[in-house]
Length: 582
Image (cartoon, rainbow, N blue to C red; front, side, top):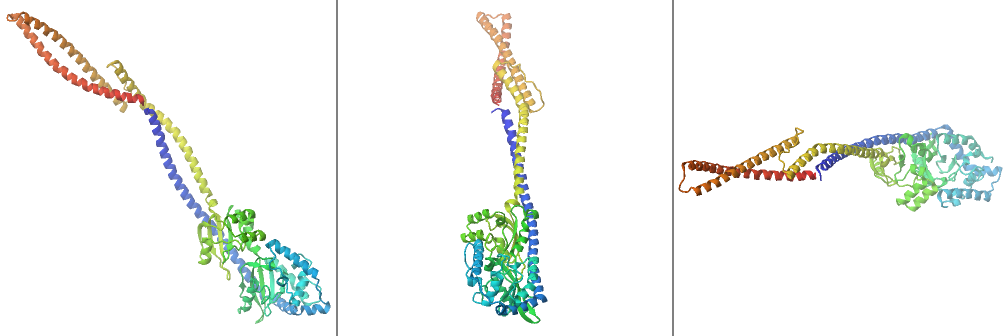
């Protein structure tokens, strides 16, 4: 390979190596530092959102407790409890005095059909729909109230609270007309699902706003005694301190079509006497509204994959998953892919919710619930997707919950990946430019080095071919190539002089040899009679013979010198051949 080509290739390789090493070093530092910076920024943002939502949820429950305690001690509620409690017991007798009660089975069957259909739509089965569960058929007084305020209520299921009054001539209906609108407005204004008044002695639910199947049931031994509603009633009844409250976690509640329901209760006192229990059924919609930011995840900085959600002590969701809200079909497919049990997936599809169904057993939820410590980490979430997560336990008396604020790692580090791509593109551009510049510099450098070498090669070849030692190299620079040219010129000069001396000595030797031959003839002719004049000639020839010996010695030295010069010339000629190959 010619030296010019080698110079170009070496220049390109050196530039490529330096650019690649530099770019890789800069790119790695930029990527790692960028990732650390983004992680720190995302961590601060997630912690901030987590703390805001944590405060909102804790305040929601605290406000609910305060509102419950305040309402339980309100004189209107105390009066309503006393009045409904007494009127509840006498309802059947009072009703029969004005109008003997008769039950239209068609009305009962129609309601049960409507309820069954609604229940089936939300659950996909007909569990817990027997009459003895839905209605107090064994307690005629209780059923009479259910019949008039639920079954014969012309308003559709879910809107039975619209009915203010039944004209049945009873004190209960008069009290209902007096208090119902106030309780209904309270529910709507403060965003609760329902309000209950329960007799502390009998456990009878003597009043509700929504008029669902739990109305008039007994929370001591009735169908819903072991539900969250029954549990908070029993806890409030045994509470001895005024102002204290009891709470139950969200769980499936059949009167609300097996929807998730939580209850909070406080005792009602008339003076020092505990006469009843006031119970709020909390709205899961209000909690979802807080946790899902009204669907405005991106506006608060959670991007396309960020969310905040609640997890209960059973490691199941207590608020809706963003991904279920945005795309239920894709969410269900994902749950199937990760191996969630079919019955759980079926309930999600039927109930159209992930609350109380979606298991969330992650490093964050375990640390928050088991150790009651908050923190930040990168791990797989309930979708088996790596996320950046800020987590913390909630300070809600009676509830062992955790709050999670997360965003997919792929989105959080997306700008770092974009930076890496930009660095690679920039590196490719720099490499292209550097290769182009290296080629130009290599060509120029090659021309500066190879052109003089080519001239040297041509001169050496010319001398080798034509044996013209008078040819000289042109010295056009003061660098190493100029020194080489000068040294070669000196070599040729020395070689030329040696050849000239050799030729001169050879001529002289030839002349002396001829004269010696003549002397030899002369000696043969005058052997024994050497004249005086011939003696002088002989002495002269002897002197020439002596000079001939000296010339022989000189020729021997010149021969040795020529041998050395020949060797140098062969080396020079060999280098010339290599140079021509460059």
